[in-house]
Length: 185
Image (cartoon, rainbow, N blue to C red; front, side, top):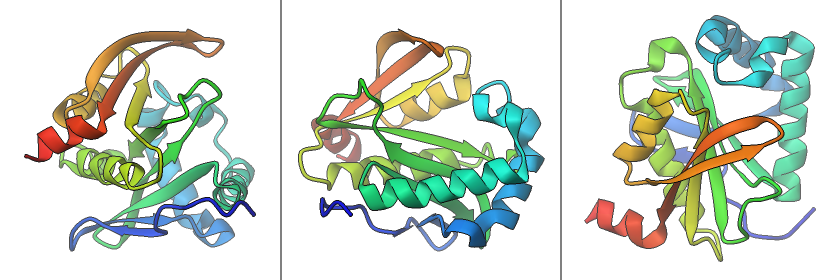
């Protein structure tokens, strides 16, 4: 196991909203149900939603444990009022700058429109900036995903342009450590 610093396993945002590290197979029933109920909402934006299955969800959870232990990716269940309501993560792609983390997030449709994604994304950004050497946080999403764009803009991220790779074209947003301080102030 890599001994590099890790973010906390639980991030308490307020008395109703918590991010907690996935608990492997123990989370399978609830996560599978939340994804299942969210498929129509997720399919336009998440390629993995097209192949949703219990085996796929189990493989996802097992991989999250491996990636966390290796210090490569930190995935959390978004827990609202005691129920899993989505997921978020800090991760790096091959082309992510060494001083950056990318954050990703998705919610069950019943949790949207209530500021949950923005609060979770802010907590992840603040958590990323507590890790050594992190100077910027990125949000990368499908160009037409206006809800993700709204979350990034609300948190003070600035749009950097487009990224094209083998998976398609994406909008890229960036928040620097100084930008977060300005938004807080």
